[in-house]
Image (cartoon, rainbow, N blue to C red; front, side, top):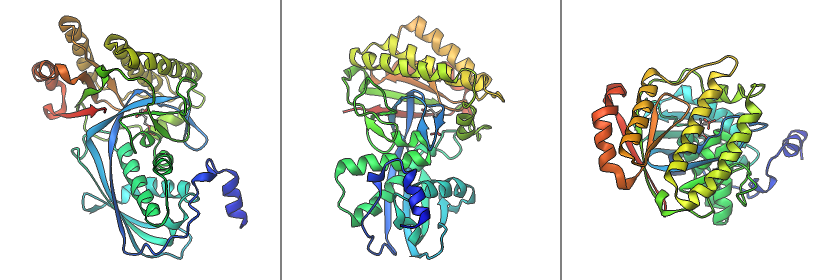
Amino acid sequence: MGLLSLRKNIFMQKPEFVCRDQAQSLKDQTFEASAPSNIALVKYWGKYDQQLPANTSISFTLNACKTETQLVFKAGNTTDTFVFDVFFEGEKAENFKPKIKSFFERIEAYVPFLKNYQLEIHTSNTFPHSSGIASSASGMAALAKTIMAAEQSFSQLTEEYLQLKTSFLARLGSGSACRSTSGDLVVWGAHSDIPESSNFYGIHYNQALHANFKNFQDYILLVDKGQKQVSSSVGHNLMHGHPFAEQRFAQANQHMAKMKSILATGDYDQFFEIVESEALSLHAMMLTSQPYFILMRPNTLQIIERIWRFRKESQLPLGFTLDAGANVHLLFPTAVKTKVESFIEDELKQFCQNQEYIKDEINIE
Ligand code: PMV
């Protein structure tokens, strides 16, 4: 073993995920996969070492917002660098390359066959281009799935190994991507109340789940469709030395424990209390980072105030969450869809850019 690979092994997070089989020729082969976006109920914000989460998070997997990816193994590559091109919706996308390059470098030891080829990646999203929706989760999850499909083509992998390693790889591309590789309700980050939960990959939520949460809608109100000004990776980094970091990580882990009992009892009021508190705590971390920044827009607050007013008057179960951006995710059970749709049309749509919103849903078996 060379010195370089020895050093890599010392820092290896999961030696059991190293592909040890010799790849037969993958030349001219194409592997396809799609992966959905997800929306966190308890948020991940802050990481350490190589993409390990500072607290546990849990997310609903969406249905409609997906990335579809093809990985093509072209000619062989004998150089010591990754050689690849990326095409987004048919056009060469140079701007995608740095993130994918660092993803490849992080996963190299686990999937060494990747570097032996010149690669082409073709990717597209089912959601509108530049809708301001974070696509790194679905994008990295889909890419990790194509890579594992390639490994599976020459290796006998158990279903469990495939699932966990795919999530493990996706995590090294973008943390939240590990919650998008499989499952409807996914937990990432070791938590004493959730057996088998791990910092290394997402697992399917394995605790009691009330029927109230099995058919949910997530309508994404597009307040700002532009590129966000501060990337997630910059935001995560600002949690190092953040004055409230430790309290925030403790809060998220307490929220996770409460969420476990709420998911079992089906209490909507308590559910939205945690979900909204998580969204606002996430943005509070941004407001109190050094340097501080604001991703919400005035219309984000307009929408939140109207949701609160409507909920009070109608007594319907609905609430919001936010990602690292200005858009508002309106969550509600499918049973109240008609009433909520009228509310959006009458009161919320006016605050969306071009009055646009995306209807997505969560279906849990
Ligand atoms: O996966 P990243 O590194 O882009 O982080 C995104 C984190 C949030 O979307 C803001 C929250 C979450 O848990 O999904």
